[in-house]
Length: 474
Image 1 (cartoon, one colour):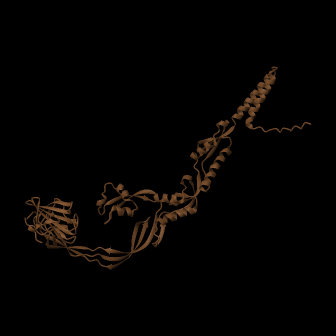
Image 2 (cartoon, helix red, strand yellow; image 1 turned 30 degrees about the vertical axis):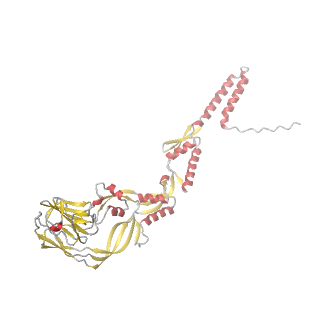
Image 3 (spheres, helix red, strand yellow; image 1 turned 90 degrees about the vertical axis):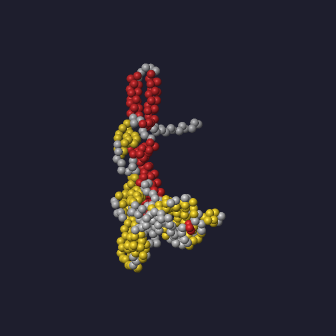
């Protein structure tokens, strides 16, 4: 007994298989009818209809998608493009954890296209990233109504503002007020994906800000190092901004150029400070015939006074912006300094042939052999700062640092006579200057090859050291 044959269910034909199916039918009927030469007209009709169908199918309906006038691609259905956009939106949403939107004008233009003329999904995605400005819903930090940065969450934006404030706040100080100079707010906003920051990035962006040029006037006691520290710069930054200024020779009121970062936000702090301030003493001059012209001598030494000050200090980003004195109480009045100023005409600034003692003090080492070698002068022990005077009138032929001698002065008195003054702490005359006998030219020191504060004094005749004690008495 034969098993019953199973009925074959008709299979559904895919639309792209229709042209092939029609072609096979045409070939089948053409073979049968062509044997007896009949039906040529019928066959021709079928062939024409089939060709028209294949042509119509091959160039099926499609859409050219444009964004702001730029062609993104060609798709069969609008839905094909929408799905690609939604896929990108979803991926961006997962990355940034916030809603992703776009505001571009999308235009669909009807067209005809073969299957191979449709744009691949990957290519459409690539072009979308180029043409579409995907935006995210975020929270923008505004300064004077202008968004300076944006973050995914409101809490993140508020944390940024808190961190910016904390940078300029000393927790050990008590502030009357802490605020932003700008009108600062956190509001919802749609921003470009590239503009979205995390907390760390936003803080860095705000602090870096832009560059601003400032001018600083040098105050007494300031150096490149103290100025750089005040403005949170490096010494190299200052040198680059001021190539024509010698850092070792700053002068009071000299203008220094500063290229400093200008943060996008300004944190203002207000505090009340109580401190003690010195009151500088005044200087009064009295003329006297006892001293030569150009000579000065302190008659009464001045003394600074003291006062207690209560002030309100406002700082912008840690740098003092203003100071208002609220109270002042004098603790100690200053004492005026009285200085005698000479009016007597000085002696001639030429050699007299007679030498005077160059300083006061104790003879600590004589001329001649000392420690196995010749000592070319005498040493007069004296405290640092003791006046050193020219032993005779003449011309300064050297004033500076000399190996072994330290800070040294050499005076030519004429008649082949020269005197040396060595180991000084301070030099008061310059090379080429003429001096008179008894004029203060230096101060005792301990510079060069020296074992303690003293003046090394030499007398040279025709360039050869001679015993100074033949000319001066100690």
